[in-house]
Length: 175
Image 1 (tube, rainbow, N blue to C red):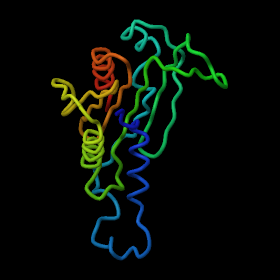
Image 2 (image 1 turned 90 degrees about the horizontal axis):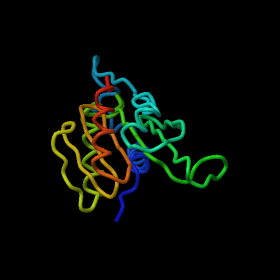
Image 3 (image 1 turned 90 degrees about the vertical axis):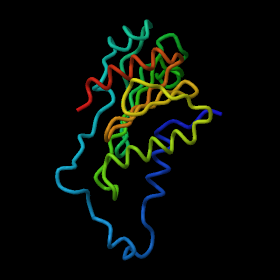
Image 4 (image 1 turned 45 degrees about the vertical axis):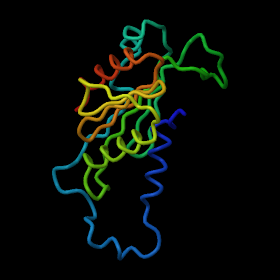
């Protein structure tokens, strides 16, 4: 069973965290994270160029197409050989995502990124732990997830070795 992309999991978690009704139950939680805990929101497309992706994958790629939703940034490098729908390829050479922990989470951005990682790992049936990259990493069904501090990276490609190389290059450019 393939786990939904990180963006689907994050949207579900964000929607579930929105308080409903009487807000007095939240009065003991801080309204925002402590001073000094600001986390730079990272644009996934700023971490690797098209040339970087082509060099690491050994395949031609289209220019990156990015998107952002709350603390999540995604970047798709389309397959120039794939059929296109509405001018966009139906297949990707690589799909990258960066979740940058936010200050609205009651326990802070590092805890938020860790919580999202743990949720993704639990949902990834047959996840294989990957050592030597980030603080924690796992591979499952064509997706590598890597946790480092307040950041969670997700790399979707066909081969684990390529995913590890892409993630390592991304980690070098994180703040």
